[in-house]
Length: 285
Image (tube, one colour):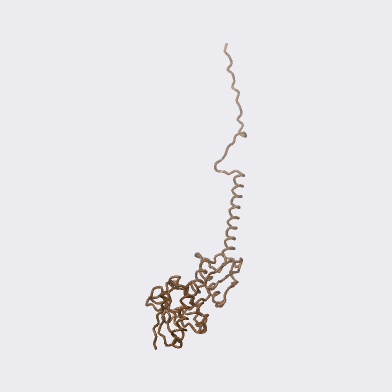
C-alpha cells in the first residue's frame, strides 16, 4: 500500500509585521525633524544678524556726549577735538569708532598724553552714548631754558610744552638754564640730569627766597661736576656743591656778603662756596 504524502502547511507571510523601508522616501518624523531644524537655524541666523546690526551699526550706541573734568589750563574743546577726530576713524574694515562699543580708549589715551603732556588720564565709557574723561595736569614747578627756548617743567623734570611761558611767571618760578654744549632733553621731553640736581635746586630756592637781599635771576647747569650755579639779579654768580648741605652754603654766602663784600655785591664776579668753610671771591672792584 502506498502512503499518502504529508501536505506541508503553508504559512501565509504577514507583510504588515515587517519593517520595510524605502530608501527613496523619508518618514513623516524625519521630514518633521528636518523642518524643525531648518526653522531653528533660520531663527538663529536672523537673531545673529539682528544682534550684529544692533551692537555694531545701530545709532543707539553712537557717541554723543564727552564729559571732561580736571582741566585748569586748557579748554575742553581742545580735548573734544581729539576725541571727535578719532570717532571718524575705522575699527576693522567696515565699522567706525563713533560706536562707543568700538571706540578705542587706549588710542585716545596715548594721543592726549603725547599731545598735551598730562600727568594722568582716566577714560571710562558710560553706555550707551557718553565718554567720561578725568584729567590730571602736570603742575608747574620751574622753568627750563635751553638756548633760546623756555618751557615749564614739573618737579620730575618733564617739560610742559603746550603753553608758552608767561612773563609774570619768570619771577613766580625759578629758571634753570642749561649752558652746557649738549642738550639735556631726550625724545620724551624729559630733562636728563641726576635727580640730585633738581632736589638741590628746589631746596636751595626755598631757602634763598627767605633772604630779600639775594634776588635770584636764574639757576645754571654746565659741565662742572656736582655744581649748581646761581646768578643773582644785579649781583655775582655763586657756585654751590650739590653734594654739600644747602643751608650751610647759603649761610656762608650771607656771612661773606655781610662781612667782606658789603656794598660791592653788585660788582663781584663770582663767589665759590663748594669747598667747605673756604669761600673764594672773584671781585671786579
